Length: 466
Ligand code: PXG
Image (cartoon, rainbow, N blue to C red; front, side, top):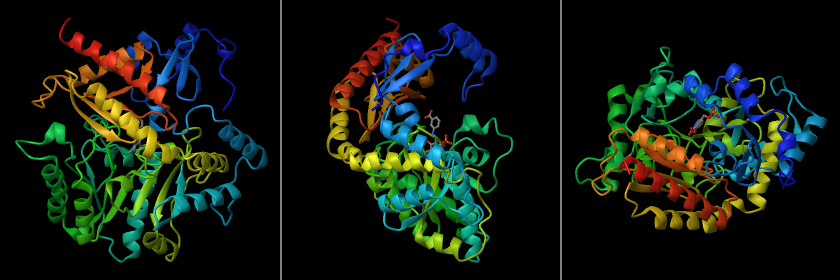
């Protein structure tokens, strides 16, 4: 671990108001209403260690989101800084396009093959999860052409899934508010409904029945489009940005059965679920299915530097390898510094038994305490999650599964109470989500949940006009 941040003031070169003014003058933030943000002013984050952040005013904030679901080993690991520094001196950049390779990308590929389920032994690199999903599309299309089935072009995805913000990522995702701002989309992508039991199950259906019914929508869609035209299905094992929606146990086995029946590739977007979040190395292992392709990013480097990748099943890799050029690549595919950081990061996750601890210790503790804290809360309708990820459904009448009329407002109110209480907990619509660094301790879990409880209590009072 790097030294504790005792020199906060020295690190911040400017005053908070100067930072805010310059930020408002020159910086366009992602997914933000810049007009209102510029008026209010951004919080300036200057430092982080372990599971804590510090802002430019000296406030210490506990990060219940691991950044954006990515800082799996926690902040301030010297091993990662050293790996980057060493690699920057040795070979800061070289490409892998024209018959060259380099040690960090070789080491990373071998290590990923070791950590991934048996048939996933080849890896293609990019810079982000979005580019990873663009790459998945490129591989899927190339694969079916090599198999003499070029009509297999359609990819089936889910509403309220998130697959990134490039044009392909945004089209694959099922976020209506993104589609509205995208007059140009990628062709041949269609969506089916999500397996969101609390929000969408009707009548007296059990979660298991609902999971099966939602999976069977896939079969109906395949028959509508024609199996000879369907190339692949893509989904997050659990929907992250969509609100930590955990499908019923019946869902993924049925999706897999249908994909196999109609000869359709199954792609797992592991950008959030990968690298230990559920207590398994990859979330599809928790849900019991075997993908042909998996998208990786975020926890691959714990977010210290940008990197994405696609894990490729032997069968697909063989088709790519034996059929000439694959015309896809990025300047920074397999970037040596990112690869060196990824190797150092994966070794920490493995050798310090961080993933194992999520499965056997911190994950079960977090899930138990979460349920103890919120099971009977007056505005909590359901709690989902396993390992170190959780979704808390806000509801007006929890038992009747009745949601707030404008749920997004309830979420935003709750998130703002968290922020004021120095906890980062994200709201997605009317679901509060937690995904702390995987190194979080029992005491830190208690702190997160106690702050979250205060914020939910304040939200309940506020919504009742008290
Ligand atoms: N797939 C999944 C499942 C993701 O969660 C991406 C792909 C895209 O990755 P990049 O690296 O291109 O951003 C993601 C990203 C949020 C939030 O607010 C979630 C993501 C990104 C930004 C914000 O929950 N997930």
